Length: 69
Image (cartoon, rainbow, N blue to C red):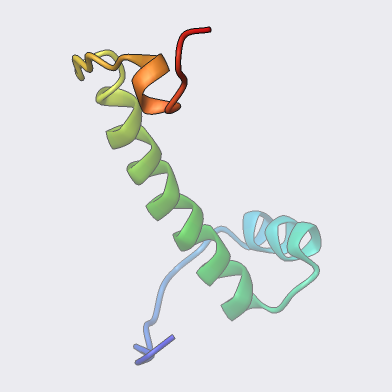
């Protein structure tokens, strides 16, 4: 992390307790991990939305540099 930002947030106590138990880390590390998962899921959704939208015409024999026998 380059720069940290101190925040105040009201979080459900039980949810925070369960999350830190799962990560086996402190509150800050658990929250960072959760934010990273949200970020990754957004990138995954964007990539998944691209599925089937690319029309690629590739000659596999040429791309693999194969010659006919």
